[in-house]
Length: 278
Image 1: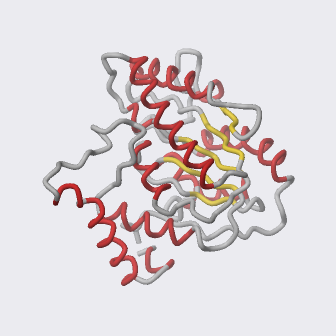
Image 2: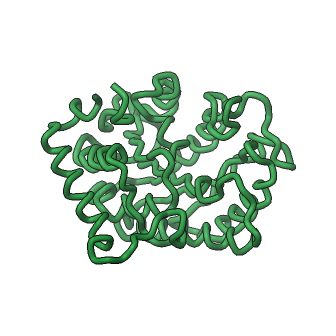
């Protein structure tokens, strides 16, 4: 398992036990713990499955290795790009970001609540990156249409704003590149919600530390219908290499502006992956 490649299995198990104890404390006190499906988008909530906790422990350990100048955060869309268990996507990641000391801290199926918890619990401590790339919120959107689209959009945006505030407190010198939620065609009816969230996100940009990046016009048409080959045919949600390249082409000029051209060497920590996969 990949966990053994990064730190001892005994340490990983101990960390899981400690994290599970924290996650269940309120339940032991007689209170039902909130979940990411029931809690507001800006409330930190831990994942409780052992695989996610092991991945969290790996990512905390990853912060202590190498040099991290560009920090990527988000859900599975972010995770897959720089993950050891997606070698073709990782090759594209290296092709685009080698020399900028970029490291991937995404985790699959996370909502904004789960990302907040991970950041509160060590995954950005002491890193001090020069740039942070954030893409999250599609798991909060889901594939069903809420009764009040605008209210749901504001709630999801509040979750993303809470992530940004936490990032600024832990990495005050970093420029945060907030990426608009990508189009998804597993249910076209959710596109108005995605568009509404992105309108809210665009208002978070300022003249200094927060930038808003929207590449959706190159992924889909004006109605949100994906262009051919941009997303996996099976789920119509996760980008193909072609889709990731669209994102990379928009990011690289910004990274060049902030960090200069990529170096000839790269000192980022080694990529991690899904601990459940060997």
